[in-house]
Length: 101
Ligand SMILES: [Zn+2]
Image (cartoon, rainbow, N blue to C red):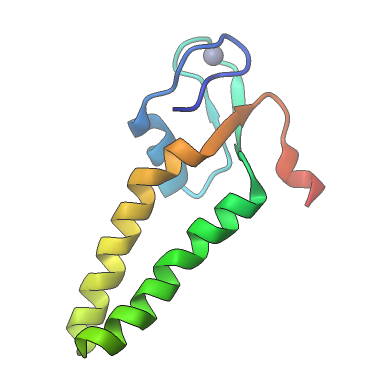
């Protein structure tokens, strides 16, 4: 789980997911109050993880012969799985590294 670069405390799964749901790449540390930026641990890993749901939707739609509702349910399920795993693949930083991209 991600650790605050300022105070070294581990953030909870919920606080990271909450920042993600708000589509913000920064958040205030619940322990020391410092602004922490959420940065991908590895851009390569994030890219791979980002493509897996899209790949699975296409593959499972073909294999299971899903209809419209099935595809939507599958997409929602994969999104929840991605959100559940996301806090484990990101890292917190004192500086906004996303500006470099
Ligand atoms: Zn902190």
